Amino acid sequence: MKVQNYIFKLSALIIAFIGVPLLLYFSGNFPKRTNLMETLSIVTLLGFSLLLSQFFTSRLNYKLMKQIRMVNVLVIHKFIGYVFISLILLHPFFIIIPKFLDDGVAPSDAFVKLITTFSSTGVILGLVAYACMLILMVTAYFRFKLHLSYRTWRSLHGYLTLLFVITATWHVINMGRHSNTSFTLFYLLVVAIGIYYVLRKYLFKTSKK
Amino acid sequence: MPIKSINGCIGCEECIKSCPTDVIRLNPSSKKAEILFPEDCQICHLCRMYCPVDAITITPDKSIPVIVSWG
Image (tube, each protein chain N blue to C red):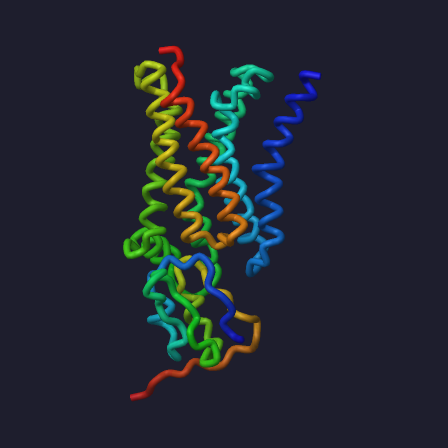
């Protein structure tokens, strides 16, 4: 019964953060490009969606933690975090891949133009989110070398996550090639629930020091 | 319609500068490029080639030679 329950919970997470984005992608009627670029788009969309799922594969999801034990939740959280943050860190480079395949602007010039168009709010938000994501990954990896108390570490990780999620979601909605109303509503719903969970846990509940 | 859509524009204006027939303009509110005069498109693909983020989709119709000024 207990095993069935946690399988049901994990399946619900998989449907919500892999199934729903795939459904929205295939029903979205977006202009199609080459198979390589479409594959990279799907991988990037799923990567971002799975990073949003981190709210629910952590200590914040008390019921899942109780069923599969914190150590297993942590394995899932770390796996998704390291793999998909690495993938999203590469996404600006994915964007310029078509520039290697035609005779237009050089890939290096395209990349410089991409990261220096400061007139665009979306680009600035993307750069802020990128920096937050990098800091999140580095501080998580070197957590025990930082010599922080658990509560300080948790606050650093949590509030940095909030900054990352808000700027990244705004960036995705503003600039994403696949941002339509359905995707926007999906992201806003997930982010709102995630922020509520974090603030409820951090601001209104006590925990071990 | 030759030029089809612009998705994922970063507002760098490279397509606007490269278009020989002034098909694309910058939307002042969204600060993104938009197709304003699609009927003037010559399907020269310059906007697509100069776009750093590959945001422009063009129909696979036959290309019309680019209009260039002389002298």
